[in-house]
Image: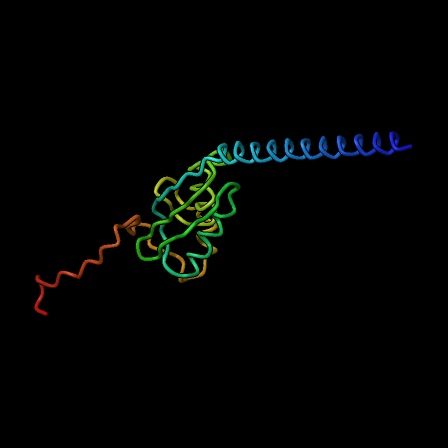
Length: 149
């Protein structure tokens, strides 16, 4: 009887030890797969000019850029007329972002805004098509030397 109980105890102990080893191997496999996946994500940062005027423009431009699959962040600077975008280059590319913004009615450095979408923008958002974009941000004082004030 003692031998039977002892045998069962040994079998149970071996079974538990085996399960622990199996769980450990599974954890190692999962953590290895996670690090391999993170290596596959190739985040790209990009800045380019986008014409626009105001806070409403900012919302529309950023919404258009963020609507592109793979875009992680988009921030349009109202003063510099420049957008900073971070995206997964395995899911999208620069031209897809330019095209999405242009489709919402805004000119980018590479793609002219959709004319019909531009016409449907609020009045305050209908920007000058010749305005400078992707500016350095240095505010230049107006030169008044050629007239008397």
